[in-house]
Length: 295
Image (tube, rainbow, N blue to C red):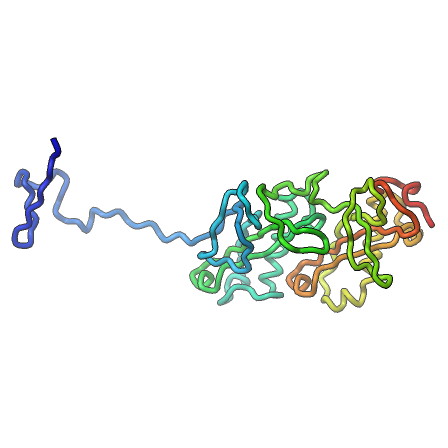
């Protein structure tokens, strides 16, 4: 049988069709029976979350993470917090500021640890995402280190993924830079075309040189310093003496950050060995003086 409960309203009071006494434990004083409310908890993005789109600003309205096995274009591999003077400002850090540079340095370190090598040694792009101005006013001081896979060394378009980028640059990874055939236009390298190291090629990635904290203009004026540093990385990579003969063993190709990236703190220079007088059909890693003789 369906049972109906009826509440009868009489002149502004509620009369229950039950006993006339109040239920046990009710003292008719409602004010002291509510538990204290927990303090409001500010939103902080989740480390390890994947995202269907790439954000420039961490708007809460645009935060719609998905499983990393689903199609996505970015992944948060670290979440940090700004402190000290950088956190005391009235608005999120501006491009080129100490706040951006501080966050960038932490992102570079933590992302490289997460992917298994310097992130600049493979087809990856790292973005530092700060909260919106409104969220900053509300006390948000976090920053996200978002990582995406890109199409290539000369093509920064985002490649959709269906798996996490953790350990993405472990040995043997298809995302890691290897061997290339430079495309020349009027004696300048216009493009680095990736090929298998067992195929015919003339260049090979050897590592990342961390340039000193100098202005972008000074870096461009003193680019020979970068080439010299890259020759040192070639010597270490191939296992040949790093002496005055290095300039006669191989040429150098460097890729460096754009000006705004440089001002934001990314000073990683990608170094490649280059031989134009012969064709290579194997990696020169550890090849020694026989693999890279003085020419």
